[in-house]
Length: 99
Image 1 (cartoon, rainbow, N blue to C red):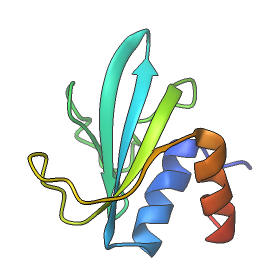
Image 2 (tube, one colour; image 1 turned 180 degrees about the horizontal axis):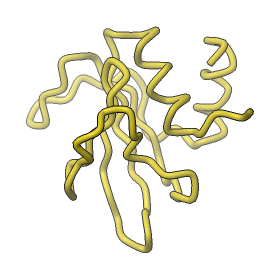
Image 3 (tube, rainbow, N blue to C red; image 1 turned 180 degrees about the vertical axis):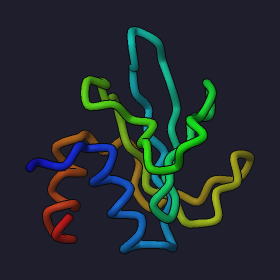
Image 4 (tube, helix red, strand yellow; image 1 turned 60 degrees about the horizontal axis):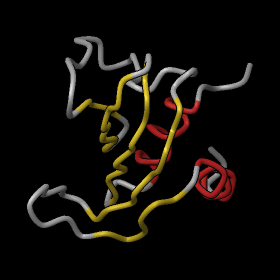
């Protein structure tokens, strides 16, 4: 069974706990920002599910860009590793990490 992109991104952050992913996405026609850190995802713009096993990034989400940041994440002073990665670029990193 193929894992969802949300689950794969969460697994990536488990393997790289020093990183935070900041994802710009469109979900159900609305813009959203999602952070993923140490295997858990959280929306910065809408309610987050109480069940931590439910990724905030649904399979039908349109991912516009992904930023890799150094943890911990400070919105006022983000420390970027890479910015504006496309989904295809991030999938290359996921494959390198065997996720």
